[in-house]
Image (cartoon, rainbow, N blue to C red; front, side):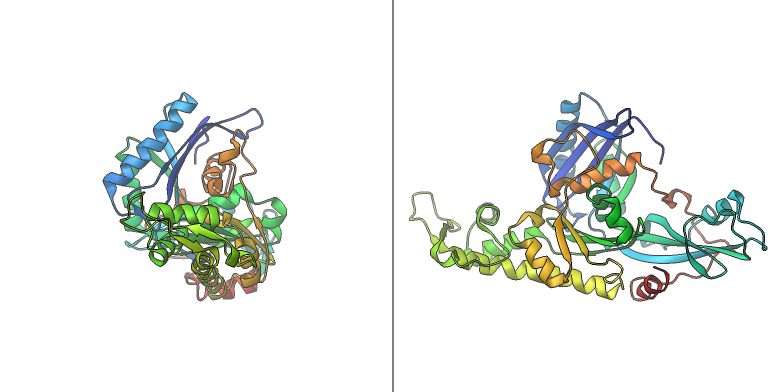
Length: 417
């Protein structure tokens, strides 16, 4: 992706649409100059379901950020939380005839094109995660080394083509050009992780409104991506149904009084839950806080158990080591880190944007990590080969068959990392 002075990021989520505008300072660090966020409309589980409503929310967020920055943007990097992401590792090989590996060999290997993803899938990322020479793995820079066969292992992330086209069309209807589409948990990791975590192994869990997405980093690179279609909005809906209260009040109850873990004082505390259809003059409806917690906790527990199952199915649980970083608005619910530590059996912390400047306190929390990460993706050399993807794999040497998605990916992770 070409570097540029003015950078704009757009995170289209199920609960909010967020736009950051910034510029690179003298140290090549992004400084945020404009921020806009708006309640999301027309988006469900990270996918566009109402084009007109989503367009309206995007326009409102971008216009607010432009007014604050005093800039007009044309190109945006867009985050994608849903879209049925799939993660796989492919091998690409080329012969070097026993001589030392040269820059020309690397270019021939890396930029020969990616295998076809099919009409129903769109390639989001193709990131090299390691090299091997004659079957010897764990090589980060093969230049100057001798061997017969040079191979690169590439982490490939795809999404449903229809979901990608819908997001692109919706953004273009706002008179904006989509320069990149980035997987949200990958972007959140760029913003919230420290270098030691990405080297030793860490799982980033982005607990959004309509979906909970996962990315695993090890040895400095993302090696696994997945998504669970459950998020904070599902907790709100559970409260609304369980207490027969309007959705707006359910969201307020979740934010002010919700918890993922019960406490001894819950039975002694009560909360007011207005009933659907009743006017303001009606008698207040008092509900024990313990009843509210009994609605919230099972949904959060179910979400984290689904995350654990996806990590284990993909063979990424062990690779992620003992570290988990939670981001996203739903991660701010009291008790979530403690519950996640118990269910995932890992050390858990809340992640916040750490590699961009100019964020106000209100936008420096875990809910804005993905959008901040999109800004960092724009200015950082990520090594993503997506721009060099070819529509069809070349016939002849240069490629191995894919290792396969998820179920077979675990074997590759165990053998190579």
